Image (tube, rainbow, N blue to C red; front, top):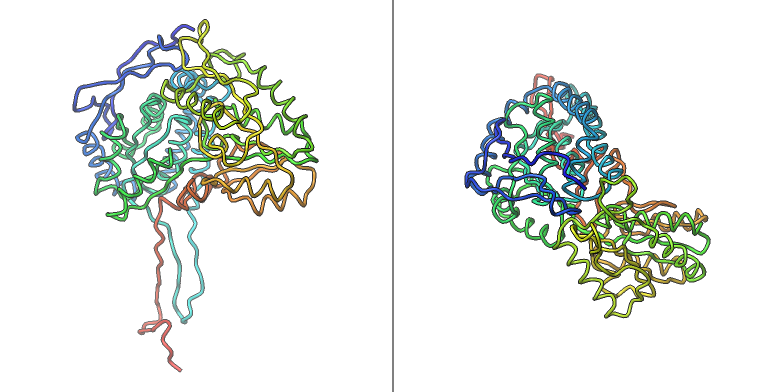
Length: 500
């Protein structure tokens, strides 16, 4: 498919200015569906660029903090309107650099729009609360205050939605930002920076530094002037970031891996369960932390489910996401496709039954990209690596189960705890699973993907460290509570001192 936009050399965005990396070097960003399509050249930055961006954010913080929250909200409302105006252009750019189909990249931009308006609405709330004092003539209350400079390290699978989740919440609270986008998808964050610039965000409040994790990510999260780190990515890298932040007690938000289960009971609507399983497993080419990578299916409907599932998966159209007829795009990179291929071989060696897929797709125009066939393993057990390790690609594994209790036990047997789902017509089974799944997100008669921005997003166990994104809960990591007491009694009153 022909390139749609002229190749451009992009710059970092620091202190309201577009500037090249101090090194003068750049790296390429290519379309994973067509390696001949060069999306752009982006700055190969390092510690000097990080230091300049953090200094700009630190300088801008007092002014932005003291800007009334309703005024901050006006900037976010303006950003939301610009995102709406440019939605199609941004979606097409995202498909070129990330690979997922246009219907999904439009949704990615829509999440950014929704988050802009949700966060802007908090500009006239940002609720604290008042409470009665235990003493007369005294007020007791608390307020939210911003924390300071925030460092964001964001992933490639939702290259605008996730930066927006983090940024909108941090900005409405009065913080300033330095963001390092994934090297596979920098163009979408550059586009977001241009949206903020047009919306009137003051210089230095939002800064973008592009480059590798080692050269940019490490000095950013370790910088002494950074007060909050928010990271979305693998559990392995999250663990290292946690160690880096510990010595200076930075506030840290981690959103990491997942190995999410759909539990299909014997009373389920099998066609509906298959719909949800195909969408959950192969939407975004399976490159979601919430992907339905485990299908736990009751033995009574197992054969019927597999027959319908395999038929649907074989019918999926794989290709360039810019083609509106395509159902699934490529893996984001050669490295990611190799990871998928490695796990396919692991699944075979473990004895899982390969029902469809399992190969790289290299014929015709597909040979120009990093395509892998949608893959289904069946007859697996819960201890197989393909059934308990995150693959992050178009692979799902079907495990037969005999009861609700067994299904819940298998679902909870992995290290992660992000999303889960049950298909059943029995309200008692639904509520039991809802209560006992060890996940931060749960669905009934729906897939494991599809979170909405006004509810908290995040997980437990090795998926997260207790914080959430989106919704009102998304403000928590970016604000400090300050308790305030106003004594107008005209005398010294001693709280919690027994005077009787």
